[in-house]
Image (spheres, helix red, strand yellow):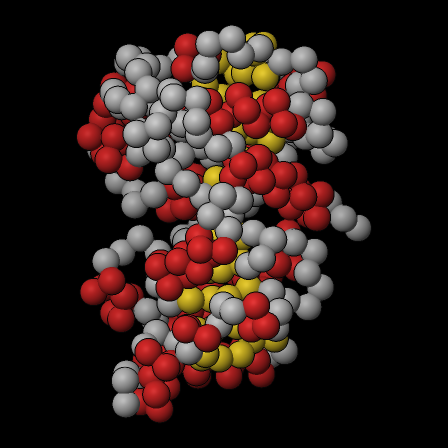
Length: 325
C-alpha cells in the first residue's frame, strides 16, 4: 500500500459516481487505500461507509468501510437529475482533493465524472473540463490529457475544441509542449525508461506529400525533427488510419494525435470499459474513469465500476513510480 491514500472527488452526485465509488471500494478494500470526498446521502443505500477527519485515517478504515471525508451538498440529490445548487460543491470537492494531493496528504487525485453543463448552469464554471481546471489549481499554464489502457496510450494535442478550430490551434509550440510532456511523464510516472513516441498527421494520409494539407510539412515534421535531434525517441507524422492496429501499437509507448476524436476513437474501441484518463504535467497525479455521468442509468445499480477501479489502480502505480529511487 502507498504511504498516503488516493483522494477520490465527489463528481456530479446525480450521476453514476457515487455508485461506482461504492463498488470500487468493494473491489479494492484490501488492495489500495482511498477516500471519497462527498455527501454520504448520495451513496447507494446499504453501503458501509465511515466518516474520517483526515486522509491518513483511510488506511485503517478501508478494509471495513468506505472512508468518507464529509462534503455536504446544498441541493437535492436525485439520481439522473442534476441540481444546479450542487455545482459549487462539486467544484469545491475537486479543489479539496487537489489541495490534499499538493500537501502530500493524498498520493494522487482520482476524479469522478462531472457534468460540465451542470457546473456552468449552477456556478458559471469557466473551464472546458476537468483537465483545464486542474491545471489552474496546480498553477500550470497548460496540461496534457492522456487516455491509457493495457493496450494503448493516446494523447490528443488539441482537446475540447470544435474540429473546425483545430488547424488554427495546432501550433508548433503546443505540439512541442505535448511531446516533451509525454516524454517526461512516461519516464517519471510510468517507469518507461526510454519512451517511444509516435505522432500522427492532421490530414488524411498525413497530408499525402502536401496534396491533402500542409500542416504536416509546415508544423508537425519540423517539431519531430528538432526533438529527435535532442535524443527524444519520436517519429512521424504517421497516417492516423494505420497507427492503431496491433503490430503498429507494438512499436511505440504513446501515440500523440492532433485532435480529440483522432485519439479517443481508437482507445475507446479497444478499451471501452477499462481506459483511464490521466492528466500529465500537473504538480500532482490525477486519473479519472474514461466515462461520463451517465444520467440515464444513474441510480439503477447497473453502472460498471471497471474504469474507476483501473483509474485508482493507475493512480497508485504512478505514485509508486514517482517514489522509485
